[in-house]
Image 1 (cartoon, helix red, strand yellow):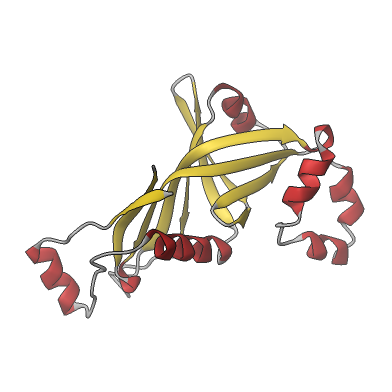
Image 2: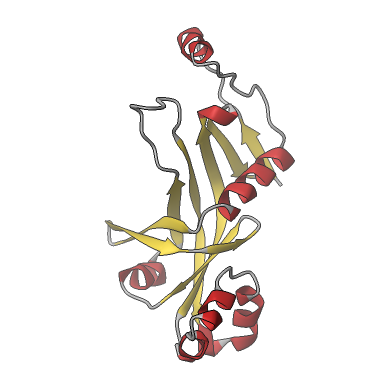
Length: 182
């Protein structure tokens, strides 16, 4: 269970939104927020994962897939894994292309704060198989003749569970609507 916070626009903001034909949401249930967030995750496949170690942040674009609000990444390793060994707290963002010259209120994106865990695929094949069932591209790897190569690689499996989510989409009436874990 969590809590949804819907900010209330001030009078100037309401006037600007009205000029653009926008109506901001006044409330949202947790079920509505989660359904919207999952639909947004399902409609994208790249996130920018921010990790931090010894006060040095790092942000990496990665392909992901999800099971509801839980996000999974298959990764070869690198600095993000070194950071995760030291600090499980992460953040990621996903955004749609934005051109304010053609649609000033067209900005749409989501920020997520959470905790990440990871393991090497070959250390827990059963858990890997459970997670892999949510992957969106295994069939395409097979079709491209890359299934065996992908299966042979002992990559890291990163799982991110959200603690806080913020969604912005003026066209859907959302201006920094937040869900927080209770």
